[in-house]
Image 1 (cartoon, rainbow, N blue to C red):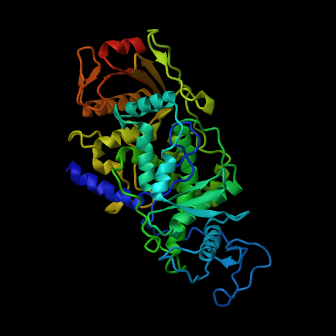
Image 2 (cartoon, helix red, strand yellow):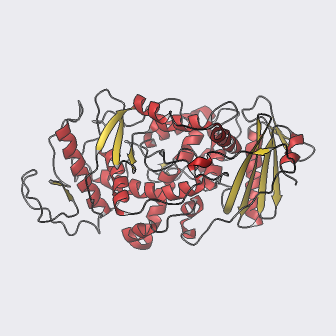
Image 3 (tube, rainbow, N blue to C red):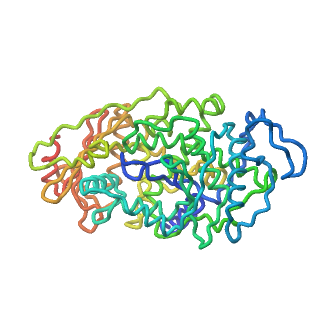
Length: 501
């Protein structure tokens, strides 16, 4: 049953996997990308451009013979109208002239759907998947950062001992990426699987939205932790995905488009995709789309535009849009370990990143979801059906994944410290919840995760995980009112060296 479900999940992943845009690969590091929806998804939406493009009247006449407007306007860019027909052949790749035409027409189409005007043209280039993998795998990560990130992903029960968490994340991106926008270079790069570079409008349109965001809004923020970046990216990616879906919905009936089939396939590069990590990386696209839909219900595109001045502070506001924008994360502190033998791991101070982690509801949900995806044993913390939002009998193509799982609701803040001793690591992870009941639900769910990975409860009330498990260690889960503290050490005796319960 688990293998059959994994096949279904892989099929969903291949339908959804896609391009990278704005985001981070490891907590607090400079943007390196997040996964974007793929070339195959479709959505039947009401027209998203109902309040856009009203100041640009398309003149009559055959495509290619229409005069340019008197001044730049929505739905026209650099000589091309949004409903222009182009004589291009993407079968053997686009030459420079064809590429320029497709890009300019796509810019006009993004303007028409989104209702915002580009300030300048955006360079577009291509790179092979192999070259992208090589490029993304050459990050300059110090030993402290690697130790810290490994411990964090071990705390989430996503990447076990002996496996590099950074490399696992980069492989997940490298296997699914279709393209990305670089704010630093103001450039779009499309990743291709073919020897001859080909471009499809779905990926191009999505990345053009990121360029439009960069030109229109201040997309910089002080988000420096994974949960903060996930919250910020949910706005960026939800906006881009909403526009992308409305764009693609017009292809065929209203617009002729360079399709995914012509672009050489958009399912990514295959490989052994880590479904737990992918589930975490995909959060901004699925719940971000729902978040943007909620904003538009409140006040149309104006409400989305206003949100760039007050981006979500964490994933809680995205999973529960009713909490936006009033909610603020609770400040959490962790006491120093009782034993001086453990040294705090403080990664990459030169990068301006914090020396702690904040992993919120989306990361907690990923740890629970992975108990369904993995093949370690037949148990799972949640049922497969809970991981998807269904539109009838199929996962909703706009918002397919569900992160509001038992044990995630009510998260109000958190902090994780990593420690090292004699080549071994441990951690103290404290979360605060809105009430005692929410804290108890999380603790109970997390103990099920520990049990799934081979944990056995000891006479002292702690957990010792089997040696054959990828997460072999000792774990303690302490509930104190609305606060839950999870402690990890190599042995049960060492738990008290890190935290005095």
